Length: 413
Ligand SMILES: [Zn+2]
Image: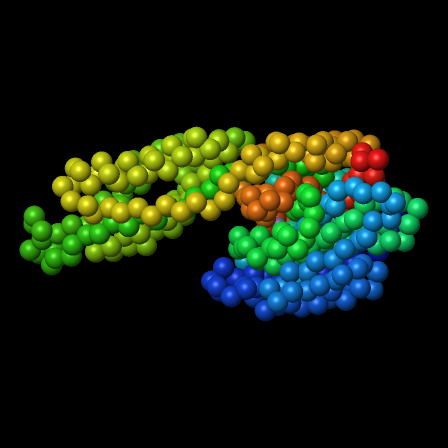
């Protein structure tokens, strides 16, 4: 239904524009280069015939596909993000196209001996015979989330070119700064005006997600006392050694590298210190809100008990909630997930419903009043040089969007 070459060239156009976001920059958007893609999209949305195309001062683009029905149905939305992860460079992406993939190693970069191998990434094998788009081994690809943008634009274009397909009003939005956790911050839910929406930001074909972590950060600050080591007896307090004790008191089995599915964790991701002061940076994650609260309590209690034992308050804790599990907001409107499941089955995709071990813009949007499950965009190995996307998965995701649009008038007749 949608031309494959067309999808490929649209996708390549987007990924060759560098939109890496910058966690160090408090400005909005966090990098100027995100405007480059935003302007391209603004122009393209106008060209394909979208209405009310608006790029706002914070680099959010919204547009409307008006209803072609003569009765009222709910307005729905589709959302994707324009930035790529600062974890790996997105500068000078040179996509490579592997046609009719043979199931063997893919040489990404012969000179640097960088190989994308199914021995390590066995998901590759499910795409034998398909067309893969990979990197040249020196950058990430940016299928996260430019595959999502490609699919939304292509689906809208398809609906515009086929007015015989009946659909209600559809709103779309492309956001900046998702990868630095701010994509939902300045999202104007009221202006968007959809009853619910979907982020097209999942990974492999079939993924459908409406549960994510509850998340908090914890900053543990330990204050020591520095004295000349030669005269330190009974006087010096070495914050590094106290930090070591604190780290040892946090459950060692409940860490990212030893947990999966619904298991939560404590993750120590940064330590900075000297004798006088040591700062430990943790993140706390759990799908279950009660257990999440208990995890936060445990970190407080360790500090409290150690302070008691030390006889002074040397350890202080600063815990901040980051985001919450969207499940709470989705379960009351579960039909918005059921619709997608039906559409996927109708077009021969096996739905893969599983909890996200992270967060999404969708979780924040759900708490801002826009319930927002996440649908696959098709890519794999996000945020690094081994990122790739099968073109067939992008085509299927585009079909899912069209299918959802089509199913609304039938459901709300
Ligand atoms: Zn993403």
